[in-house]
Image (cartoon, rainbow, N blue to C red; front, side, top):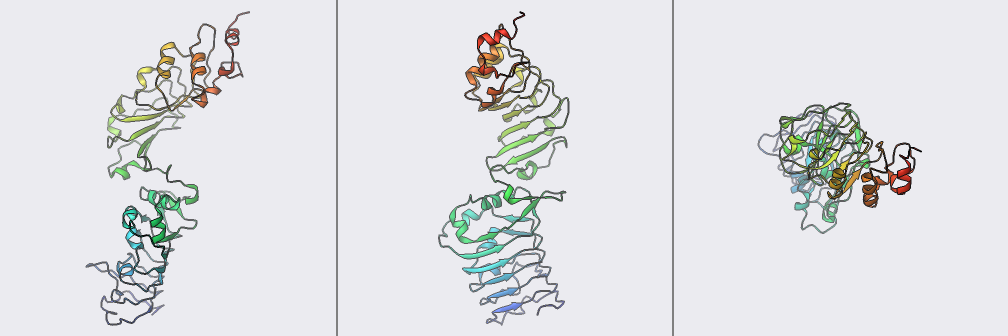
Length: 376
């Protein structure tokens, strides 16, 4: 029945053809729309080995293709209009089947509950599902597909089916260029926060707000906006969840550490302030929850005793200060002592230098430090 103009097949059309083994209905205009259930017209054909349905307008993946087709070997669904497939679609009754879903309109491949579904599946099956050449979205659902692609799922999942992703890319909404899977890693993948929490996005267009699903970290990115100040208030911050928060203010024209009172209730762990014009470290602007503080490539000239003592006792996981024009002198050794004490912990401190000196501060002696301000 290939190459006709079939639009519909009655649900009972093949109910008496129990011996039907090969059905070829490619190159038609079939949809199989059924408002009562998600069964296809081939529901009763338990002995089907090949079902050819390419080049139609089918919009759904029907459950009977997986539940009662124990002899199915080929399910050809190329060039249709299927938009979503889920983990349930990969649990076939047949142990050896090729499912071809290339050239559809698949935006989501949902693997959210696949690990629970395969708990007791220990036998290797020969189930291959081809999904190349589909416009998969770079959304929060993609995280589990990246985990599958990066080999992070239990062996039971890979025993159950093999997803052929090929050179698959994902696309972001309103963007044309796709991101290649082989350049993406599930541990660093980010998706929009409003989508993750299923809330209305209230952030200004100035900043982006993302979630890293791997460790449930929030990232508010206001970097490289070239602004002398960034006003973000409580009306633009999502207070959902106590997730660790990275605030990225890198690459602006900030002259001081901005007030962070508006996120006082949030778990701010990373404050990224590099490549600004900050000339002073204001301790009252540094929340005690911070684990990473980046201040490299700013305009810091000195460091007081109070500042060095505070930073020394914070036990930061990462601290950066290089690229600042520190004025080093014999009477002001706090920055010198601080660098000597912590440069073995924070690699960046090995690159801190004094004005007009190429030698790193941590490699200088006290005599050399004093010579830097000796008027003679």
